[in-house]
Image (cartoon, rainbow, N blue to C red; front, side, top):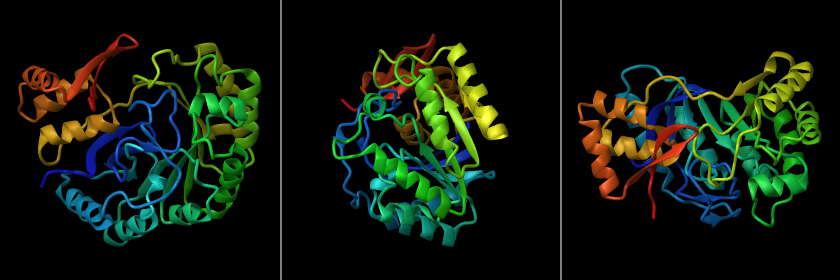
Length: 314
């Protein structure tokens, strides 16, 4: 069975060993974040609708979990775009929960959480990750490049409401970009907001994979340390840094080449990890990657003194 919606398992710095589920085509999103690892948004949307038949996704998730040889920590909805654009999200989550006993997580940019139906659809999840990169409108528009109809005030109000309605785990993620949202004032504003909501963990992150815009640089070590100490003073042990690459193996379940392409479509892979992935599946990794480059299916690029394999859509 060739995978269409499911990829991995992949190592996640937040969620351990995670089986990914892609419920949105590339790149339908409500944001076009300057640091996004899968590039600029080509379809900027905020209207929810069906993208894929939900029963196909559910059947594939159940099948792929049955093929796993070892346990996973989460099934994670983490698509090529914003997962809450999927009008079937709640039904998808409830159906997976009925069939499987694996915890269910979702990574959302939080942009549509002001909508009551979106908050309702997030209720069946065990863990929800919320993006909070800025709380000042000017900085929010620079870093997240939102759909023009979105309003930061409504989003922040929705996050507050959701944090007290939701019974599962909530984590937040703040990506610190040099010269954009890394000023002392904005860090303090973000911390003040996060302090108002119920969370289990707040992550401070920097880009560790190639960003959408080449000019994007991670915040300096001094700024990261400053932010961490501020957050720790207010939140205690709930704050954690995401500043190093994930550890662990990327795994194939069915067709290794298809699995490889599915993984890097949402999760650009370090070249050394790509070689390890393909060699473990019994392939000549150098030959396979050269062939994929020649067919213009992948590209190898440099970022922060490392080589990455990324998917090509052009």
